Length: 390
Image (tube, rainbow, N blue to C red; front, side):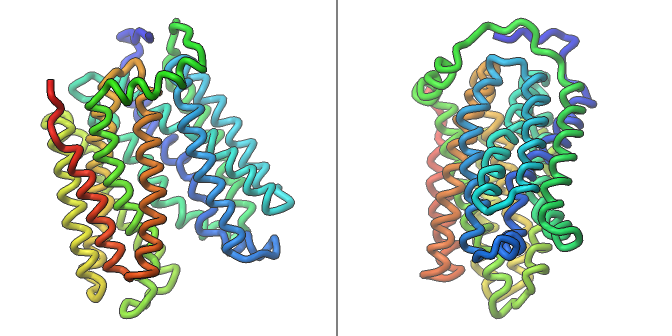
């Protein structure tokens, strides 16, 4: 177990560094999404074949969640953040110099596996924060995380247009290294920690899921939320560029920046979690997202309603994230790395399912089919709102 001394309590400087580092590093997972076209052109292949780079990033991140994050309960997290940031920067530079599409996919996948720094920082912040302010502190880091996700696609596309796609990875490598090492200096050393065998860390994961009903409910709630979010977010550009709206691809990409409103509201959401508890706020997030999906369905023929729904969807998702991740990590703060592994794996796998279902639903039933699928996912999420028997 780690003993946190009073001198190691959360400071404003560390919180700012953690939020910035989360935003910079999480962007590495999404860099390739808007530049598949230029990558395909350079390697003389189709965009569909080049999308293996995006798939490799997602698979790599999943592997990192499972295999790297649990080490945060045993290894000094200060050293982990610095080491992973340096390794990620090297791998991104390898991607920038990749001579072939398979090599690029390999480097991107490995970089995604080591860019799990945000999921080390969130349990760290949760452990260092005072219990009455834990939700607020976590929400600042989540705000940085969400900003990185929303902005990365726009910046990546613009940078590729100006300098070429290889420079996207060069700039990302430089930012990851600089911000990662700066954040490492802001993190207090963990000090003496009980040695835990790596295999034992991984074997303990199913036990936590079996024995902790609060953790199971939090995972179920946000898995449904994130699946619904990805179902609509993956297909959003398709409905925006189709009739009757007819936006350009560039205009559709900029519409996604409406999601930044949720990042601005994240600290307020965290305070609400501290005051009312995770279960109540999770219910609020579910309600907001349900209303947003209904607006999106109506917006199939109304751009105004569609834009309102687009702005509201990330707000509902972020509200749910702030509440449910708080609930998951407070089960046992000393095991925050393993609890976060379970929670994020459930979230990420559900998100992948939501993206797949959303794409199929759009192809068969159109935009209304996507919204219907999202509402089904939200109904599953609502099952997790039941109180845990004490």
